[in-house]
Length: 394
Image (cartoon, rainbow, N blue to C red):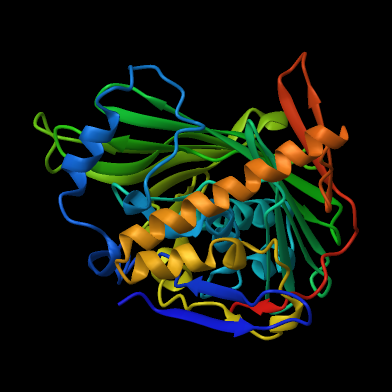
């Protein structure tokens, strides 16, 4: 059964809100609740759903019926990749003494944001203005959906004790390829170690969903990490290999290198599996050491808990989708359909009302701009520090 924490709050003069939080994915399995809420014949239903979609089509605004939804928003999934950990890799990034060691730890942290996915189901598409605010220890994480057409999510996280700041913005672009769906994630991720005056810029791999001949989901593609202050660069490749019929093969592979371009030198060779262990080999000494162990970092993850129900905003993902998530977990598909349509209709109504008033929507937590020349978004947080959240990750 899907482990869930929820509670009701009745505010003065306002309708009661339901807050539903679900357990994050971990390496123990795609989900300990998947059979509990997922409908049967999912592959057949998915093929039927996509039969009228042409190869090459952009699926960005494609709406899935609730039977294909995970009981959580994509905004929550982004946040979980940062705050749902069993060990504090960020602290290790900050505490390393040398620039090379800090860079290597950042590579390990970047790998830790890669999380398992489940075939045939996807999180909800966030609505405009939706937020997700969670704290773990001294790390406070805040996300906001700053655009829906195209969908752009922004993240700001700060740790005042470690003096660390994280700024992300990303735009998923899924396209149908006939027998697969490829989702590229445009945008940028930045991790700032303020004590050291270092900024690490990186991208993330793309998600490949193979429908035939054997259903699979894999993270694939190239991730580049660089630190302008030290000049260090990492080139990491996510790959999966298969046999002729799609069975077997070697999945979830990571290979790459850490370089010092100023010396025209490869410092470390990177090798492993992102769901197991990743190691580096010192090209000078030949020494091999493990820099990332998925079992230590993304196993035994627990459901976040509500510490202050009154402080949970109505824009919070766990509130926006609370009724729908509960219906999905109870296999109440007709109610789930009604709840999802209700959320979508309320969003359309707000768009119409803004249009009638001649108002433009402005994000509450980020300054957002778009360059037509580069076709790139830029999201910068309004506030220096993210405050303590009413939802806590244990």
